[in-house]
Image (cartoon, rainbow, N blue to C red; front, top):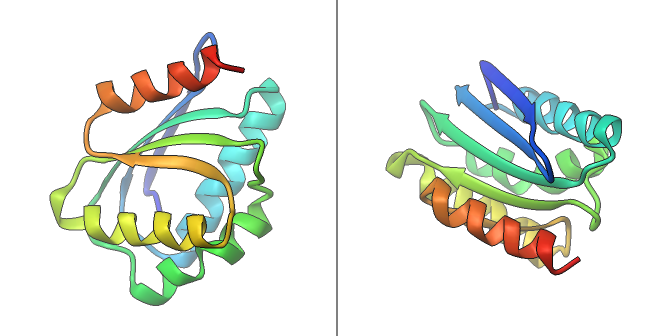
Length: 127
């Protein structure tokens, strides 16, 4: 899912910025890297920003349940995810729906970073 990826630890969350092209393999690599970084920093709150060049295929979107399971993303992860590209937003929204319907991960999709960050900080403050 990412040709470039940067993970920056903040005080209470990890900030992930990705860009590039979407594929099952890239998505699996992305989420495994995020899960490993969360475990390394003992921090399971994630603010993610993506700016992908192409949408995820429908089958890859549907398979995000498997991706999250293989990567070790569980209910303890709280993810505020921002899709900055209007051309890919609906596909990312579908992924979020697939995961929510299968009760995998806890998160919310946003179109702007400030709203996502505020939502995440509210979740952190409520813990």
